[in-house]
Length: 126
Image 1 (cartoon, rainbow, N blue to C red):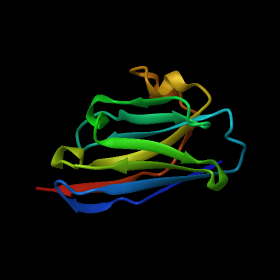
Image 2 (image 1 turned 90 degrees about the vertical axis):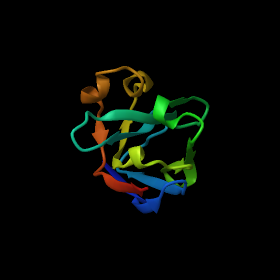
Image 3 (image 1 turned 45 degrees about the horizontal axis):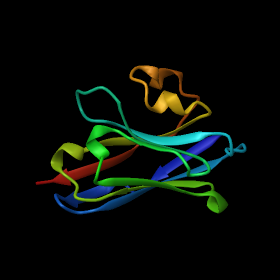
């Protein structure tokens, strides 16, 4: 299984970025996909999650009202649209996949998530 994250980069505060996570190696129709992030010196935190059908979503507090998660089943890809970016959004963003949606929501459950992609760095300048 591979989760290939891309789309990170340097952006000014107030700008936007779209992260992509291309999944391969198995069927993900029963999986939830999501994004976590980890800033320097901080713990990894859940940003957003979605089930593969797109009927259920979750947003962590930092993402509410600014980020949007979506799927393109034909491309086996999950997107994270990030708007109104702030310097505090600076972090490495990781894509993840697991059949248990609650693992993206429950504090401390991230260590049990089945699959992780390599991170993509997002830097927001002030």
